[in-house]
Length: 294
Image: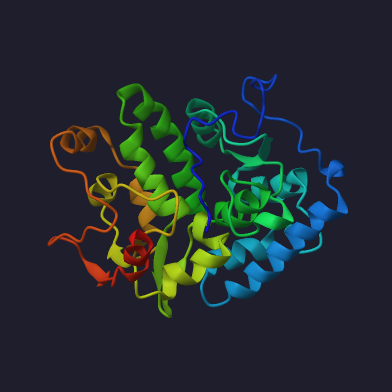
């Protein structure tokens, strides 16, 4: 299980006593300071996740991974990653000490800089982390940044996040990021596939999201998503499914102002809700979350 919330104001989550010296919260990756133990954790995570995602990850995730200097033997170097990524879609990876304040996060995305934690989880916490580490950020997110539409969408999200913050609508917009960039599924001819980083980097949730009978899987509808709460402490109760990653292009061009107005006058939904207006691809049994609630 991955419990990560990247767009939450948690700037000191990495144990810092004060904000970094740089206003944008970036730090040096410190690649040479990684120990053999750090690289060994990366290797364990990379090898088991790569094997698991065969037949579960979307084609564009696999293509992106294949084109990047990401391998099992060592934690990737952000400079080498950025060189390839920038040539493909104009993005760079920058190191940060952990979760950063909202305005910093959005500003990075708006300028095609993806903030990645420079630390890696311990060998005792392979399946759970309270904040995104280098494996979640690089393995989960960076391959999809090689896809031009996803690259444009995440930049647009950063721009939209800065606006939403001023309008007091951050919660509604954050749901879009959560149910796409973090926990999104997409249809392919072979079936549903993973493109969201929170699933792609999670050993336990990868199969649950695609194969379990428990969660609902519902066709993506923007307003529905923006009204739907999400779980940060467990597997999702619902996954929203795109017909194609190209659908993100329309989202990137959306004027959210009228949506924010409508959202202020209607209901919000719980993660397990199924509406009469939903296009339900799989009506989940709810067994997993029911058992957790006792």
